[in-house]
Image (cartoon, rainbow, N blue to C red):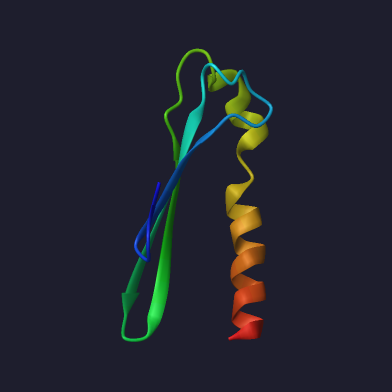
Length: 73
């Protein structure tokens, strides 16, 4: 789902059983010319919780993205 420019969401099953996806949810909020990005990886169930530890490096990946975006700024 893509509600430009405020919200993007998708099912996520990388490295997991596609029958039991989790959900990536990203919201964008602009205030005073600055865009804040809110990121949530949820929808965990008993079928997917074992994969959670392997998919927990979002803060590292998003931190790298934020630094790269700031350099382009």
